[in-house]
Image (cartoon, rainbow over all chains, first blue to last red; front, side, top):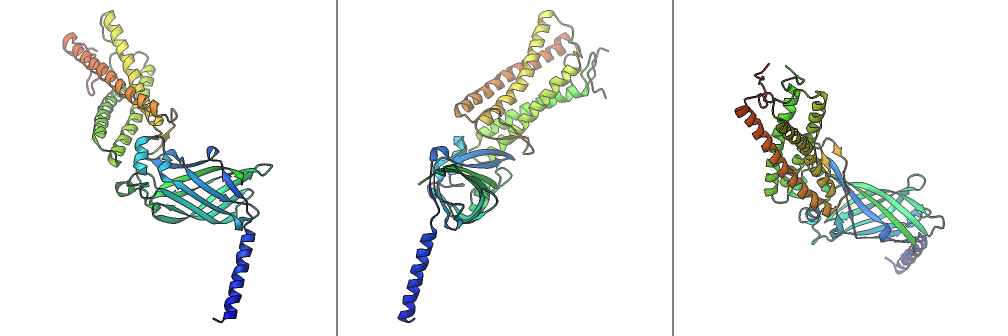
Length: 192
Length: 186
């Protein structure tokens, strides 16, 4: 490669980086943990039960007018899973499910957003749970307050726990613990 | 076959409900004790889940039994006995009906308090009776066990009374609830 071409490529790279950073004008939001919730609904022997993660850190950059510059990065502390029953929580955090000692954090990252109707959007991203990363699409609504200083971000998705190896050995049996788990989130956002 | 109760005999429906509840409750005790022995795991969970489904069946049968008793308007009449005995018998039966409702309902509440669903063999889900509450769950667990102790005492008393009627008084009190048996008196 000639020196002139290299220089040209460097320039082109600098220009595109600048363009990309200029496009990153989407609003950065801070999540009010006390008014936010990350819940899940699982099934046991055909009946549903709810649980939640008590500790999770969403980094939300979102602007309906700049979907290209929007992104979600959420880290979830698996040890904070709470189904309101100590026995079940112990099993859930244990070696056949989340294995919180080994995989203390689950992550969701999304950079591809699309509009799906008034106030409705989808985010295509990747969820990493235990040592498995899978494509996951979220559907959500985004409702900014009148002054646009705060906003509600609410939505969810459905995942298959066995895709992520959640439930090993005898717990793979879906007759007792259903494969599908619904995830729902409700985030109260403040403009950073 | 005689379905409804008559003046001096229980019909097939009452007999079926009575004995199926007896069999179910004994099974429930065996299942609960077996589950207690198991370590936390799928087998234990499956066992307790069956216990809950069968418990909801007991509740349904107990409600039917009570409705059927009301529909049969006091038939059959109690066997002849002294007034105090009649009062004890009526109180004992009333308590048994109450326990047949309270036992499964306390178990249902116990599940709800621990945020576990109650289903009928996974076919339908019953609503939670109370919100999730750890302390309430612990209390209800004790209530569920205490109710069973009371139910055992009253049911054994009920069975002994039936045997007493059969052997000593030689009346139809036991005979008319036995399956495939006709009362001696017309």
